[in-house]
Image (cartoon, rainbow, N blue to C red):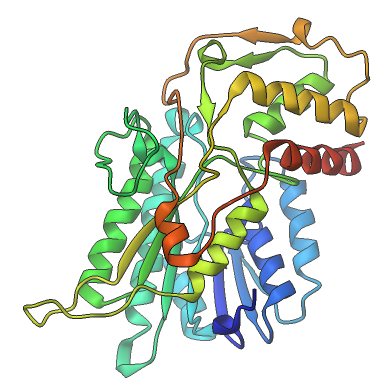
Length: 354
């Protein structure tokens, strides 16, 4: 697929050293001609900074890549970025991630996910000052966690999402509300993407597949929550990036309503695999692939290293994406199988850590 709509554009990617951000930037340089990417990341130590540094080193090989170390919660940095580089497309992926961490360290979420996102919205708004052409499209990360403990599955973007079960989920829902207000008031085209359990090589060590791998290698016992009765819609990183790039190219239309006032150019989509996997099946596949890649020995005793435990606060029993809107509007549906994705992760893990 050609990405002509992004040719020659200047694109701001926040969270550029992060898992999704770095893969997005890499893909932009692989597939889009004459693109300039401005990346910002605060490089915090929420997880192993070596991973972020390794991702950045790879991105820095692209001559037009500009990296700024800083926080999106610093309004002066964001204002200066927009004034200096005048990005036409903005992809906000910078956020404090993780449900469980939000229970113990809420400050990080308010700062990055609320104040940081507000600064991005304000900068987009002022990009139109003095009749400048301004930001053509703001794409931002939301999360499947906004669905809370919804009983109806698969989760549809038409569902009510007013019952978050974690602060992290509440901040992501807030992002969607803030974006809607700015789209309505200032006619800023914005698209929110609700990501479902993203995984893959060089991913986030706080995610289950990565944490399990570290623990198994150290001979520790892994805890499987809700006694294994959890289902997750695992989505491989390349599928997520493909979805993001397709969405970046088509901003919601600016049209006026019957009253002559602009209708908010605003959309929200799910990006998920549309096929939830049982946690115990997932652990079995992960173990098989870790053995296959040589991360774990062939005779590893998995039964001795796993423990079934109750549900954790903030967690939900199932995530399941209805992706019909994404398919209808962009002709795309994630398709990487869990085994294929975990195989690539296991091979990367062996190469990076062993």
